[in-house]
Amino acid sequence: MTTTTILDRQGGLSAAVLEQIKATITRLSDELHGIQQVLHNNPELAWEEKIAHDTATAYMETKGFKVTRGAYGFPTAWKAVFDNGDGPTVGFNSEMDALRGIGHACGHNLICIVGIGAAIGCAEFMKTHNVPGKIVLLGTPAEEAGGGKSFLVKEGAYDDMDICMMTHPMGQGKGAGIPFCSCAAGFSVKFKGASAHAAAHPDKGVNALDAAVSAYTNVALLRQQIPDSHRIYLTVKGSEGWSANVIPASSEIQIGIRAPTASEAITLIPRALNCVKAAALATGCEVDIRREIMYLDTRHSDELCKYLGEACAASWGPNEYTFEQEFRTPGSTDFGDVCYRVPAMHPFFRLPDMPKNETPHSDSYAKYSGTRSATDAAVQSAAGIAFVGVRALVDAAWLKTVRQGWEKQMADVGAPAMLEGLAALMQEFKPGTMAATAPCCQNGH
Image 1 (tube, rainbow, N blue to C red):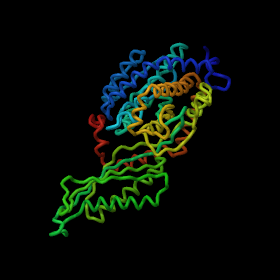
Image 2: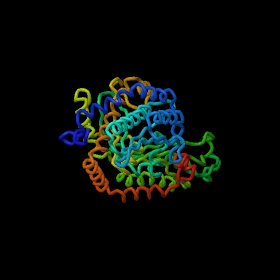
Image 3: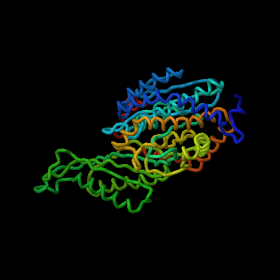
Image 4: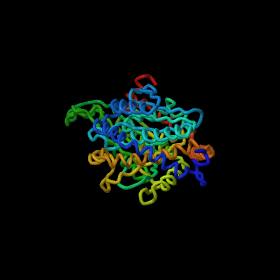
């Protein structure tokens, strides 16, 4: 095939090429199902994905990829590369971590095989047609509770990619959609007061529980004056040794802050933390605010999303594949950080046999994420983003348009200055437990 036969007259991939890519990935179905079953039956938490790491890397080596285990200083991160000479670099992500107590209730076992299938599908096409370029598949740990991709971005893992893609399972249906996920920031807070006998010497006490309750109340009142799309939520934690007749000398709160965009988060974060500082001032407590993990909002490349919808419609037709171009979700993902580094796309894909109204992060979702029909949906999703990856490899003019469109999107939101402002805001606070216990932080990164 030449470039002219690979592309159709409208500029996308020809029908024959779409079918070839789809057939290649479909032939992997049994092997991919086996991989997702290993992950599903052995759920591992953030930064602990050793079985997933070993299973995926061993498989990628059998497919001719050069594999780096423990990539970028993270014990459970990995990198699989297929290099066919000078050309564009197409990136994919495979997540691996599960949720505490409910296993793969977010379907990261499926996300893992989507990345694997898409990477192999592109590589096989490159070998068959001698297409130059590079495929990079990153095994990304700790999405659920650690911000693995955020650390990988800082380590330069995405610097050489021309585009990057992954997909995520959602609820019932056929097809996919483009979710716009919120920017999220977390903080841990400790109030320090002074204990005293609550009846005999209340005047000598400084009540840390009052500080926590005041902070909770302040945030509750603030919620009345913020947009409906914004979220602030917190929990209170105290000492197991609290006693009704002793004024508490310490208390803790965990506070989460979300806004649709990073630029909105810059405004919301100080307002929320002022509620905490005011509580400390009113009660006379000392306060220690620590930053935890922050995820940027997803900024999908318009051109990548547009072509995904077109290619999938051409390959499967509207009865087998419906595409929702854009919808807003209050959820968050560390892939948002990737979107601000490189033209990127993070579609959701639907599971046909999932019960209606079922959503991730439930016991029942974990059950269905391990089924064969879920694997079949993941294979279809892998083919979809492989279509986009192959076009990026063979259509230089379109890839240039993708880059230009992404640069305009970044300029429209004020990046990089806006991101520098957000980073400076977060750096005002020392790292908390989650931010400081990632393997990279322990290694001095």
